[in-house]
Image (cartoon, rainbow, N blue to C red; front, top):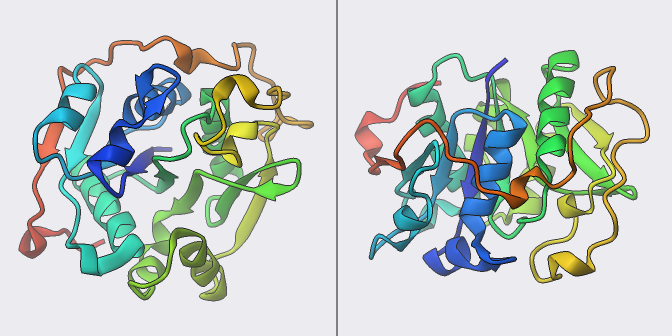
Length: 235
């Protein structure tokens, strides 16, 4: 299975917001990489190069967004197209708003493994029963994504995908970071407890906060993907 991470920042300020001493997109990219997501695509404007600098050394592609009038669903589709252009075998994408900075890498691993057991389903991690982010969307759902109206905000985009017939599967992962964004300081989060039952049949034996330390990725990065609407692949 190849599952991409799409980190969506509405502005450079959102991308670079402080996340416990790290830029938000860098913390998220490190968690995505540690959890097994690949490729990793950051969709953000970067007028002065600061976002690219924050991602230096990370195995990511920094993608210029689609025009703003395409709305949130258009940015999700844009990130998906870049991921598929990089790795044609990509069979699902993690839709990850940049405000959700506290998601642990184990959560990403669990979502990827669960995708292998229900490959056609849209996976939503939950914490204490509350659905959160990132949402795993199989590539088969991209047609429905492209049909979502541009004025729909991210939670509404997911609701529209479900209304269009994409099946949903909720996964309780015991990670408060899936439901609580960076407006809550990390030190004030409820404790990570992990899933009550192994989502894919086994329990991981690694720390809940592996993203605290920034591991160097295999690329100098980030690679850059300018917006070229005429060259978008058909998927």
